[in-house]
Image (cartoon, rainbow, N blue to C red; front, side, top):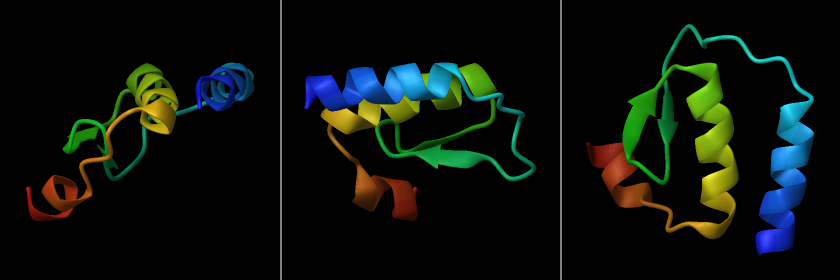
Length: 59
């Protein structure tokens, strides 16, 4: 899955992101985030990381 994560990182590097109105729940953290740089980083991490779905929806 690392090649997919690398491709995701490359694609997201070219996308302009703004802070969301509603925080995004990062599956790898099971916590809300709003910083565009962190959203980019955590989106890449979730390609190869453990998805904490249960904690994300109950936390």
